[in-house]
Length: 365
Image (cartoon, rainbow, N blue to C red):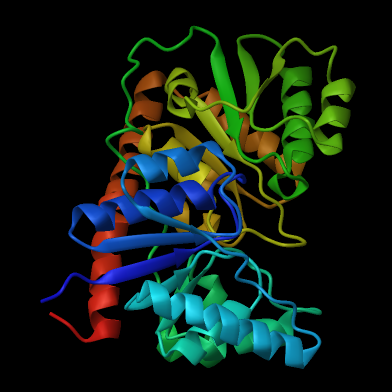
């Protein structure tokens, strides 16, 4: 059998999360003998150098077109289809978060099977028609949580497959048996408003007012936005709260912490399955999460670690519950959380399921 060629498409590698997830999967498939190509609209971002170092072929192509005017959309999509045909992939796998369907049209014109990963809960509103077309043209749709199908993708149920983005459990594993004496709550994310950092801070302040000693809150992520700048100013006098900024060695901070908090909101462009929560769980870290899509799957069977989104009072109560646990209680729960990641959300699991999906689409053994 000839080596199968996969072309991954993504807008860029500057934003966190998706680019790294794509790279991990691409590398895993490459190591299994697949021929990997990646296409982005530009080559900025430190991850691009790692991609090239791994001898993965990288293409810089502005492959999207606006939906209007229609004549321009068809013309440009046909032009991109010629580029796709030159690369000669057996399949194209889109990691684009948006409802753009021009690359799907280009794949159709090129006669190449195309699929996409649905990473967030956006669907309704001005983009609904675009999501329909994008899904209609897709050979498969990789949904990131169980609620996507019931809420809006039920019409495409025969195309759906659930392959969660995986965690490298060889990197994200507990190593520090002597954590800081001071109990540490930690939050790691892109720190966008949808991550609910303001709710977490309100909950933590309520916790501080009742139990002022023996704990702290550490927040990791890009801290240069107006949203975070304003929060930093508002809580600048609270020495128990630390904004660390963006860090590459996230696993080391998780390893030193005692409890992770995923405070995602249930509004706007809702996320599909926060990878940071999975990484924390893989570290055997007690993990609190809001009751929103994605997290409901990730923390299934751990209802006592969840709270109603946007409710700082409930979040405070769950944080207090964890704070009052004994070390052995937290350790026992932490092992169960890591086991769930290994069984359902590991990178090895994602790679194997992706291989099976590709073989099914391409009808090869």
